[in-house]
Image 1 (tube, rainbow, N blue to C red):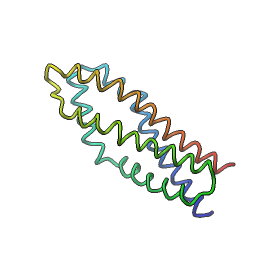
Image 2 (spheres, rainbow, N blue to C red):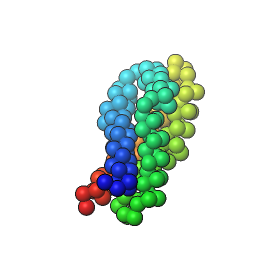
Image 3 (cartoon, one colour):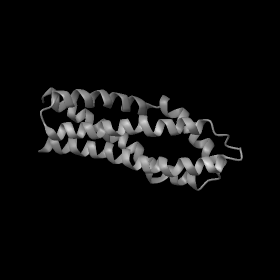
Image 4 (cartoon, helix red, strand yellow):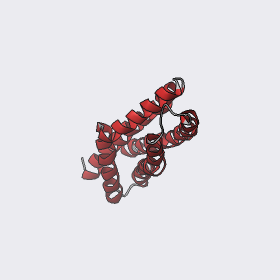
Length: 150
């Protein structure tokens, strides 16, 4: 097995793991939070956002980012490069779209009079962005797997 093949496999597994975690938010976590009282939803998401940078998923995210860059540089396969680029797009969406919104939500007083407005402004766009980054991560994983069997 070549170095590029090993890197492609590891990148595919990392992209699928990251995409799967994001999928959980799109499939049920945010829907559940939207159905809870606003104070509870805001507090829960604030706690999730505090935990996320300390979670093992960050190791997967950062490790796979490094793997994707290395794999794309070393590979001569357009499918591999496209798969890596798709995964890296999910990381860019996380940094440019989700993290700023999460940081803004951290400043919301969950018991305050503006909490419901803040949650409504946060949840819908956050979920739509999450669908896009989920598709990018899982699409990248799929492209990488297809490159291995092709």
